[in-house]
Image (cartoon, rainbow, N blue to C red; front, side, top):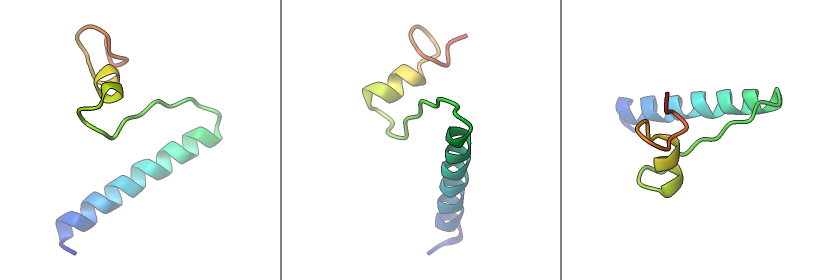
Length: 54
């Protein structure tokens, strides 16, 4: 496995662990890791309907 692939794998693990830790603190988190999906577009649409808006 290349260094780049290891870095991507470690980054994904870091964020997965961070989400698990937040969930244990009873924080609600809505995420999408599927670019192009309707959910991903709703969450990441900063213009008109996204959760990231404003």
